[in-house]
Length: 235
Image (cartoon, rainbow, N blue to C red; front, side, top):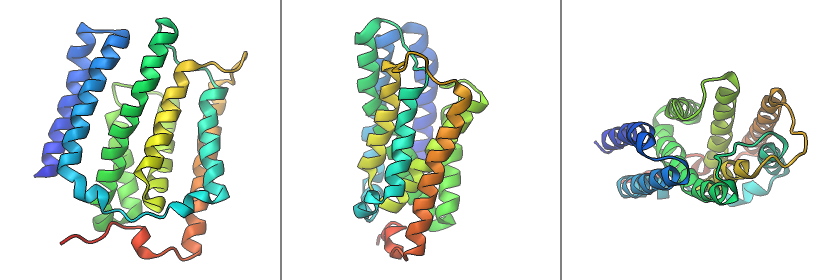
């Protein structure tokens, strides 16, 4: 029942923010209005799934491993090396979009990582949970991002990267921070006089993902405790 409510709310949110609001607002005003809707959905998702979200064991020490640090660093370097996206309106508008990226990161990681992965992993395993959460994450971005191979590669790679980090570390704060910084940095670019061509962006995305996968495999080979990889059983 809770999942049905969340699904209905997510569909309603996507339709409302991408149709009616876009027809009546634009620029920073649109972003602020959409963020108000984001906050409303965050409150509902937290109320519905708080126990599930909090059930994830933490393994924060695993985030100190050089492989995951390198993977995160490579991914976060992308907005600095490639052409950014400007919403228009100058620095003030860019700042609004950058600040609301925190709300974007929290909303999307709360639902697509903390809720979906914790809900699905005990039923279909880590790989199945990552696949399903990523597939739904791609569907969610339809209409918000252009349908191109680059956009698909970016959303898929980052979703898997975030999912692996969340499953291994149990840290919602880490994936929210990563997501928010990655999104927010784009609005202040380009940071290079001659940004790299977008044809090189998949190489950075896949390299970052490969480093995080290697970190994941390293943890498995080291025999990470089973309770680190799955939410606690709830009575």
